[in-house]
Amino acid sequence: MDSKDSAGHSSVRHSSPENRELVEVIRELAGLLPGHSEINWQESRRRCGDVLRELVRSSGKSRRLADLLKGERHIVGGDEHHIVRVSSEPERVYKITHGDNFGCRSYFSPVDPELVGNFHGETNADPFFYLERWGYLNSICDYQTRFEGFLPPEKPMWLPRICVSQPELPGSNPSPQEIREALAKYRFHEVSTHAFYQPEIRLLLTDAAPRNVRIVDGVPVPFDAIAQVASGRILTWCEERCRQRTPS
Image (cartoon, rainbow, N blue to C red; front, side, top):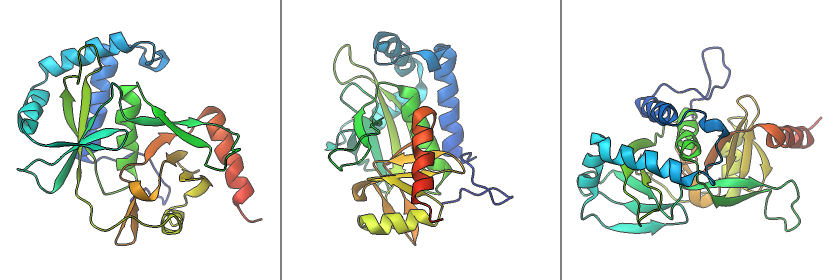
């Protein structure tokens, strides 16, 4: 992780080529969909789908991506992605959203009656949330996720898909305790099951379970966690959890 600036403070900004490209894609979408922050994407799927289909048609990058993936074997990689191994790039893992949505996001519940955590996965219809998720993860780690392009939908009238790729990671899944200890070095506080909050940058990692994290040379790599900047009641709740868990 490299989340400190020259003054020693953490920052979610990261000037890597991968993040600069993500920023450009987000700007392009925002330009086509003004006022996107107020849109309920679950209810505006047709509008979102129309814009993304146009990007699939007009983007040379997306056309090249379709050619690159043609004939390659797809496997289901959990609830969020199809996984593709490209023969010409064996050192990378390609991930394509599926199921008429853009990965997952976390549903927050302040009540935890079943002791399974306060954050529960649900489908995500917002392409901005998905792209920003990778930008936030890129900002705290040298391990970078790269935007590859848009692809046609799996079925007619479904949303187009987004493809990203990641470097192949060495090692095996760490234990929950190893994840806690590794993230604690970067001032992440465990606030719920598989959920960690960094108060200096207000960054919340959920679904940071052993299946979604590697520890490489002592550095935690949450390669498939869900990342967001905490706000509203989630921010208030996370800050209170940190105060409760910090020894006086």
